[in-house]
Structure formats: structure tokens, C-alpha cells
Amino acid sequence: MKSKANVGVIGCGQISSIYLEAPSKFDILNFTACADIDLERARAQAQRYNVPKACTVEELLADPDIDVVLNLTIPKVHAQIGLAAIEAGKSTYSEKPLGIHRGEGKALLEAARAKNLRVGCAPDTFLGGGIQTCIQAINEGLIGEPVAATAFMLGHGPESWHADPEFFYQPGAGPMFDMGPYYLTALISMLGPVGRVTGSSRITFPERMITSQPKHGTMIKVNTPTHIAGVMDFESGVVGTIIMSFDVWSHQLPRIEIYGTEGTLVIPDPNTFGGPVLVRTVQDSEWRELPLTHAYTENSRGIGLADMVHAINSGRAHRASGALAYHVLDIMEAFNDASDQGKHIELTSQCKRPAPLNPGKHDWSEDR
Image 1 (tube, rainbow, N blue to C red):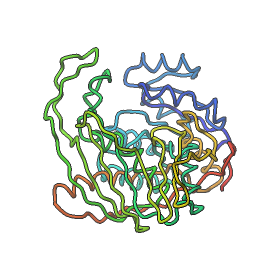
Image 2: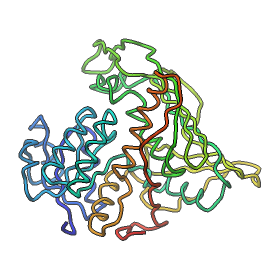
Image 3: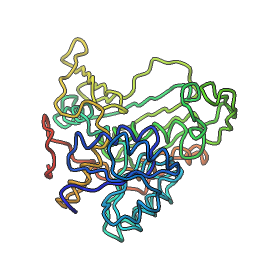
Image 4: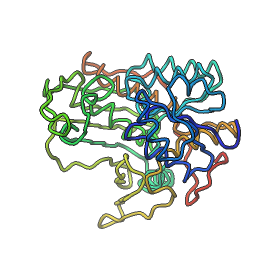
């Protein structure tokens, strides 16, 4: 691949704006085309971010000058668009989740492997300064040997503020598939892969009313669990507890905490790139905030894509990888399987803990 990759964007909705700012932070990225089922929306984003071309999805995939497809479509077509990109001979980087079930994710990875192409997937927030600081603290033994972890994301759903919230309550979304990837990816980046899970899930409100504009009063049929409680046995021996819910009005739970033999680490919001990071060890009489050791503490979506392009050029593994995203997908689906079957689910997917970034540096183009 050329030192600067030509990237075509498929899906020009709300999330595309922050990605289209990525070349200002990562000069290895060159956005050359925007595509969307709504061509006017593609044209608007192309004009706003000085992208040379707006076109149909088919035209973008047929463009021989595009090296990588950035897939920002809705979850139910992530795998379909990813496969189309691979078939067109292009590596692909997708918004989360990788797919809405394991079969989709597996087919995408197998197709990419057969063509020697890369698959990357969000979230890449774990590459931000906040969680990278946590990774360094754990690696250096600040809290001793990790014993357990908790992760909580509880609220009452997006229908009060999102303009088009129906898809949040369909398969491939819900609180686990929508927000779970941030929490699970952060946990895996700190603690390594998971070996088995169990869990319970439910749908509390079979129908929900949209109270945001412009669809105020529209009823949504809920077709995916909206409260999921899971237990994860990490391969390292750590026991993790997770709750993801759209059924809770208010709470006082933390986002993520890691408990070690020598102390506790409080992890920042995994949907962001910065801090704060708090720690309290057996020697501390109170909580203290750790200074962030790594760069990229502002919203740096696209860092995972840039890392993948650097990795293609150097031949190393990329960090926000398809294998990591498939492991996350496997875990999320296994929580529902465990609830339906009333047992632990042994995971068959595997991934390596992503390599940490160098502290205090913006230049990570070489293998570290």
C-alpha cells in the first residue's frame, strides 16, 4: 500500500463527521470519496470535509484508487458492506459491532484471510490516553495481580434524545451491542481475552414511545434484550461482572473498575479517549488521580484506522483488529445464549491482547 492510504467512506450519518476529521490528526489517511444510500447526504459531507467525490456505494467499491473502505453504515449491514469491500479487493474498517451475529463476523474474517486483506473495527477508544494509562498501570503492577473487574452502563434508552432511535431496539443493537463493545474492548485491552461467560437478559418494555423529534409519539417494538447481566471468566483468571441496560432510570454505579491484590483502579468512560484515572492502593489513605501517560486524550476516532494502515505498511498486527472485534461479538452473543440455555458458554473465539502504545508519544507508526 502507498504510504498515504486512499480511504472511501460508506455511510455518511452522524458518526461520519468525527471520522472525516481524522486526516487532520493522522496524515497517513486521505479520504477520497463519500458514499451513502442518500446521495445528497454523501454530497453534503464531501463538501463539508473537502472530500473530492460523492458517489454511490457501487461506484465507490469499483474505484481502483481506493485502498481501504471505512464502513460507517448501520449495524445490520456492517458485515454485508465489509464483505463487499473485501470482494472488491479492499481492506475494511467498520464501526462497531463487527456484525449482528457470529456467522457474519466469521464469514467476513475468513473472506479477508483468503485475500490477504485486513479487517479492523471500532471502538478504538482503548487507544486513547486514558485507557492506555490504565494498561500501563496494570502492566507495571500498580494494583498487583488483577482479581476481578466490574463494568456498568445503565440508562433508559435513546428514544428521548435520538432523532431516529428505532434501530437501537432491534437485533444487533440494544444496550449490549450498542455500548457493550466499548466496555468489553477496554476490558480485553487491559485484562486479555475471555474464556467463558454466563448471563441473564430480559426485555422489560415490549414497546417504547419516541419522545424526541421529529418522531415524537411513534411506538417502537422492542426485539432485542434491554437489560443484560453477565459474568466473564477471563483466561487470566480474572472474574468480570457486566450490566448493560436501557431499563434503568438512575443509578450510582461506576463505569469500569479493576480490583487487584494491591489496590483498585477506576477506569474512565470507555466511550471517550481521556481521563480521569483514579487509583487507591493498600498504601493509600484516599483516592488519587494518575497523570495520563499517553497521548490522544481528545476525541481521536480514526486512530484505529490509522494504526491499521501503518500496520499494513510495516507488516505488523493492527490493534483494533477483526479478531478482537469478533471476540467481542462472540462474548455479546454468548450472554444471550447463556440466558436462553441456562448455562455457561465456552467461547471458541480467540484474540491476543492488543499491543500497548508507547507512552507520551504521538508517533506510533512503527511496530512497538
